[in-house]
Image (cartoon, rainbow, N blue to C red; front, side, top):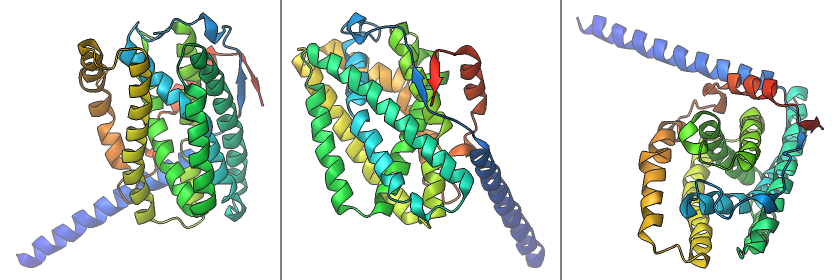
Length: 302
């Protein structure tokens, strides 16, 4: 009887292992087959046309997205630095091509969000000063942190952006109240984050990046990213005399926990990153790419 039980357990374990390895192989094949390019977009509006609270006339939601935008310029440059400093170790020609197009996309993202920062300056927010602070952090990391660790950091942040991008593209409760003009910019960014969500991860694996380094940096980035974003947003709200208003905190609670319930919505996908067999493309949402591409021609491919 005990032999039968042990044999049964062994069979179950083998099947589970095969399922995991099949899932890994499928995700990596999807990642290898994704083709994308840079896009210079024409959104057809000037940032100066936007209202101060362009997200549902809500101070909390608008300043949250504005604060996030301020972190993108130097964040994208951090990612570019990390990939460039490791790409000489990549031998796969397909992945080399993806790296080049990843760099194009991230550079354009940074430019667009910097233009928004310049507009936010005119509203009294110190957006470009935030960018300067982030630049100092990026240069410090580039000088003092090994290239493979910076790539692990990039993989972690890219997982955050992939999760947020998926919500931006699928969760109407998140985007319906945005001014439709700037909503188009955020959705474009979300599409491109989705297109290249596996690139840094594939480079990290290709150069021999390990599991513990990857999850360590996700844990630390989770804390530092949330703290930095919250600090910048809190300052923006303080500038607007909205920080200590009950309506602001009520909006924050609703946004994170009720509608669109951002934290519980992304929680499972966030936890998946800590699995040894994780790959970004196991969350296969390629259909979103095809749908967006079919509806948009307001760009120049680069």
